[in-house]
Image 1 (tube, rainbow, N blue to C red):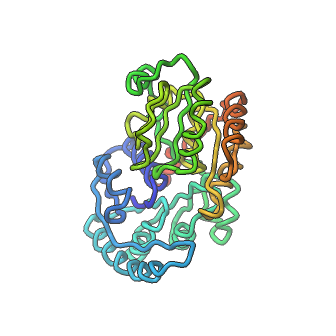
Image 2: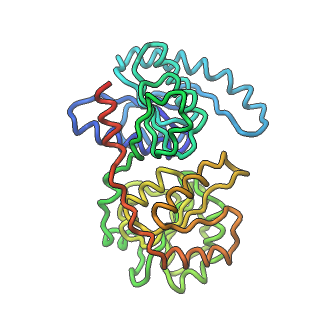
Image 3: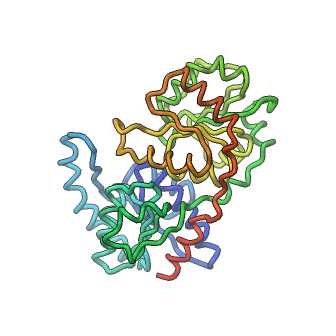
Length: 343
């Protein structure tokens, strides 16, 4: 397994591993960057982990782009040695800059490669990996056009979703958060790194929101506002095993537009307000993801530049909308595990 940079490149791997384990005994090795988010997450999940050098391409001028370019060949040789020693039968890559040297190393060893693209618009890493992959798994039918040179390799699988996210208990979440459960509950989550813009919108609107709702706010590591101690408001840097219970408690979820997060919300049949990263801070992939899911699920979408008034209106409309009937009929993890097993 490889992929990293954000939790969105890591969590789907766990869903696929969960499915593969149903088929019998397999040995898993996770290859990622040294010190990246994927290292902690993989080790916390009890996976064998190896770190390699990798270079990140930044979509703005930076001298670090030049320096990181030379990390790729170093990571290639490191990954090659790791893959050989592990006697790897197949490599599954979820994308992200972390996966590039690992995919190239696997290709040089003629190890079958299966890749998966969560976003509507594929990232650069998966565009590179597609040339070497035996199978290209995508979440959206519409995404096939971005890999048209490799159309014979493409399989529309949907997004891999961890089954356990749907097994939470409201009662456990109430005990954990200290909320009363007497009002509808909003879960606010800005992705693995948190989202300063969403955090500020919530904090600036807190007095108005708490008149109607209770709130569980996942702020991101190092981004909590410890000066806020309002009744009906619980904030955390990050949640792991507790997230399933908090999901169960939630009546409305406010989220960024990461494809994996949106797939989990749809799987859980929750109402949602999506505030995707704008093109000034990303390649626009979250905007496309939000458009697709909003159309399919009836969710509300706000522009990344939205102010307090627009935000409060968006929350009201999202909560009063019927956008909670969007359960996916297919968990992509099942189909991906089948493809991996057959290669």
